[in-house]
Image (cartoon, rainbow, N blue to C red; front, side, top):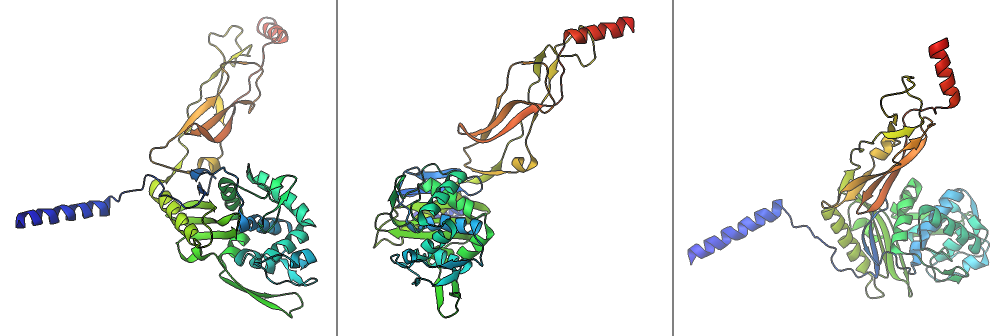
Length: 398
């Protein structure tokens, strides 16, 4: 009996030692509460994990990420923002603006992103765009510029809305792209990392204090930015940017529970980040492939011979910058990047130096992640009757 116990203890000890040095990694994401979810590579925008990632859904106050970016790019911090009747009449959550009050735009961005005030969002939209409707057009144009494929903004605060373009919505994938773009702006990051902020209206008669509702800032290490959201239609929503183990992740969650399940979004975000940390590592583009020389017909021989012994060929060059070659991609161990060249079998002279000949594509699981031009390394002239005449005259009569 003692021998059995000793053997069991020894076995369990060995297992614990093995697990300590070779931890088991989650092959798949644990079950999520969110109706739509995305884990994204924050450097490239590639979706690493998606659950109904391209399904259009309302996204509540995560809309304010785009509102903030538009204000930062199109306004100035010391702009005077005057409160309209429309802004002052917005439903909760509100700053409590009064019609005719004036604020500095910079102060309102803290109200927008820390406490998610709906009246503040409308005041900013009217200041930047002239009206909520015109501001929505600017938001939608920016979304397309970023690369969003199924996003339509109607309101600057994320409250339900509809216009001739459809209902207010985005997808988890598009929301992730918007955050990826937003955190490139250092002022945006500074605002969304601020825990508490106090300001007054321009008259100095009324003071306000706002506290950051993004509790995830203190739940996980490396949280760069984040924005919460909730409406009865959208449910709890969340988008954040996180850098852990030198890996840059974006998490986007839509429809992540309703009242009574407020903490589901934190749970889902942690699960996605754990999956990313355990399964992905950075890989750079592989070495460029050796490009073939392309035969060129009717080409002037480099040595000037009338009847060259060998086929004239063109050497090629891949137009890739050192910055592109240094770009990193988050890959699983089972994934790899391959090159595919799109080149003609032959060419006709003349060919100019640096002329576009074809293209080179880096692919991951059959999907293109990078593309560059393939150009001519040198110029090649075309043989003409005049060239023959000049050559014969030079060789035999000069």
